[in-house]
Length: 280
Image 1: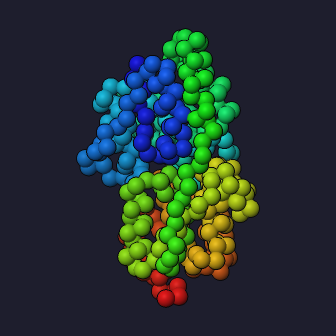
Image 2: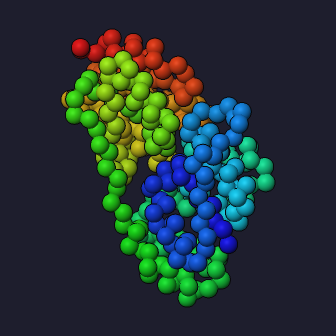
């Protein structure tokens, strides 16, 4: 059996355990080709990246896709900012990829409480409780990961960057942010707290339900109070990477200059205007 896995969309947060576990079950784990792309696909990164990856995995003939639940099982009754890219990646992808393989959906974060879900998935795939139990024994230590640390530069006129977390971990989006800000003499600064800590920060901003909204709001609160951060950039897109409107109101009340940019906008003019407001 062949299981396709993503290399984007926060895969670094959940894939270390699931990839190892699936291999221990004796299954073949298939990654998308790094050069995967869909010609003529007019989507912003990172949506374009994940569509290309799933299209490539479908072409490779996988039996299942392992997809992340970005909201960690939280089902919010609030309507604002609930793009399918946030709350149902499978549904969002199916608009572009007909006949997609069936999905195995797992939380986009690791913790020891996932043992039960892993056992359920393992037994469903192998029909062998003993093999599943042995695979879990060999891989369960990976459910206690050390959160990846963000390394920020020490100099320059620092500008805090806030967005949905899957935007900031997308290589193309991150390169574009770094290149655009450095091009006008600014240094991008990313929140260097673990996701759970950022969600705690986000609860101080507003009553939000979705974990990714809380994480983005936490970035805003945390970066707003850092002395070395002179300004803020909020990256958002109503369809692909929405931010709660309350974040814009919260930023407006702060003392730091800020700008909001869309994924498909021309960023340099916006960054130039922000740079003009910051001390040289």
